[in-house]
Length: 460
Image 1 (tube, rainbow, N blue to C red):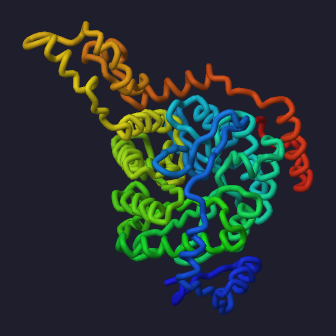
Image 2 (image 1 turned 180 degrees about the vertical axis):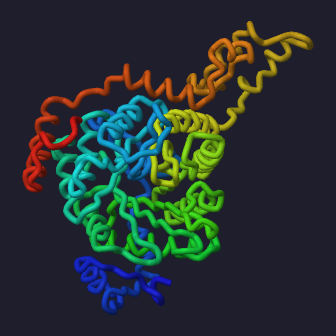
Image 3 (image 1 turned 135 degrees about the horizontal axis):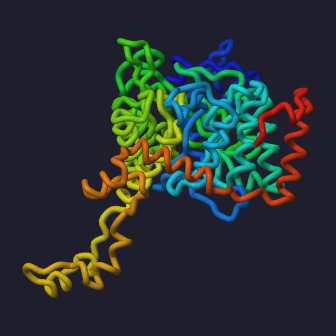
């Protein structure tokens, strides 16, 4: 497909790079030989380290590791007081960041909302700035302009003390446009990631039946070609540059003309994309754990639960989507709290069942004998916390009487209370003073270049 149909590339630097390396270029259509695609994807590393803000901890991205984050740039937010889905603000985004910082099973942040009260030209930069000020977790992000990625890189490097290429704090999304196109902005972002040693997450987002074939298999073929074209650009620019095989497929609903990311076919396709990434030996990503529902309800839970669990079973390395509803358009703090528990359950699931002489428990079964119980046995005390995932209070395991006495609250009500309490009591770790000074210097210079005074922005 890459050789015959080709891929459209709207970036002069990438076109020159591809032409110089043996690709046939006709205008902005590039025909890539299969041998070159295979050669280039083979140069990408099988894994890389992703560091927390102060680099005291790192996560391996690759192999069988699974890391959840809240997902993409939603424009709406579910108001906890009214339940209304409204335009997101900077204060909403700060709450999302602070809550994510406190959750046990969401291990990475993401620039997951687009605040309506922040100028568009610096929206991506502002969101990264808020995260760096309010959380120490690693980040999944992306730039929306040609120069934005370099500015964001400088902000991250201010935190990393000049060691960003050796100790990356963020993964950047670079999304081709289905079918088979690279925009000028996204292609430049990919090239800039390569230049600065920043891991790039190539994320095809085909809509099955609209911008890709209606069949799942055909969509996999198209998305694979889109990933490979990005891999060629990246590895020709810098062999060995870290890449992630991503995916945000959706099932286009012919009845309502909407893209459905919570549909089972979208979940299947995202997991299949990850299997393709594993075939090539590169880290993987998927938009999973999100829902098409507009509220936190039964649909929200079953669609998100399906995606979160299957992502873990498929060992998708980076999973974006917990907290998201209305496809990729809305963030909900209540849903994020519930999804955090689903992620904890998924982690327990993939630990599997440990089978050895101790866990088979033949000796203690013989000791207790017929009609006995295991409550007082040392074996039970020793293994209870190892064998059981202990969920937080959002999961109800009370007796009916105890549940009634506790107020007969459903999961959404409990999640709302947990979110409110966490925001009242959780204090994110502050930036070290030297890092904060460097970040402020970089960010103020960016604002000055755009003609924006710090006082014009919402408080972080």
